[in-house]
Image 1 (cartoon, rainbow, N blue to C red):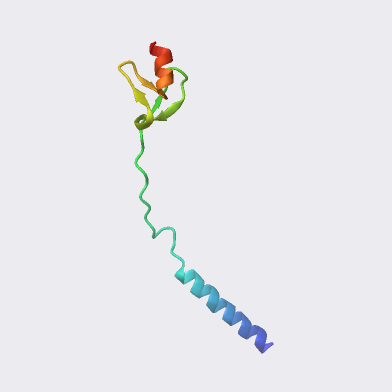
Image 2 (image 1 turned 45 degrees about the vertical axis):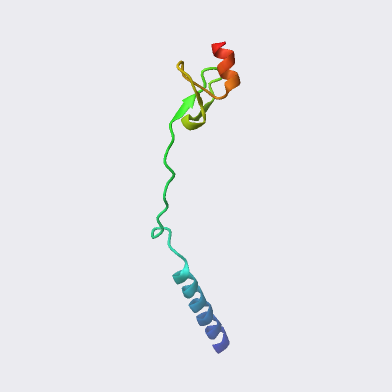
Amino acid sequence: MKYLVLLGVIFAVIWWLKLSREPSSTNTTSNPKPTQAMVACLHCGVHLPQNDAVHTAHGFYCSDQHRALKEG
């Protein structure tokens, strides 16, 4: 019986040490990525980040091929 109590105390100490070493999620600060404006392709309607889109005077396209198909 005394070995069972001793084993329980050892497990409790190990568990307590493990919990004290883990960083809590409230203490860590994560830097969120800045949001990007989303635009729709005038030809197919797919949405993509504005930085990745092909920009013309008429609007945004997902690729040069769609720009050529729509604008001629």
